[in-house]
Image (cartoon, rainbow, N blue to C red; front, side, top):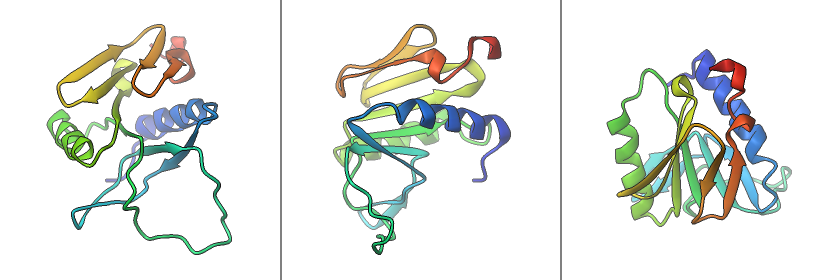
Amino acid sequence: MLPYYNNAYAKAKLIGALLKLEKFSVFTDLTLNLDNKNYAPDISLYPKRDVNLSLPEPMEMIEMPAIAIEVLSHTQTLEEILDQFSVYFGAVVKSCWLVVPIGGSVVVYTSPESARLFNTGDVIDEQMNIRLPITDIFDAEEY
């Protein structure tokens, strides 16, 4: 899927906010290999690591991220994303976030059955000990 204007902007804002979290390394569109099938979350967060850009890089990751984030596009269905989240949780991803640009909200899933919606204040992921002002992702004047 090719990103659209609003989707790309929301993703860029979110990445900027996530880069402030010193305990994580942030990657975009990283290919994850799960049971010989490839998935590519919009954003993956791994515990902080050194990245040496001069070394050969893997084509796909078998190590799962701590957090997988999807930014909802108008070409995706909620069911598709939730199905991916179930796969990620089965592969030991600790937390999955669904970012909904059109609504200015973030839904944090800590399991397939447990979710919290944030559209004001701070986005809180208790499992990963993250607290991020939603205004770092969505400017108030955008809504």
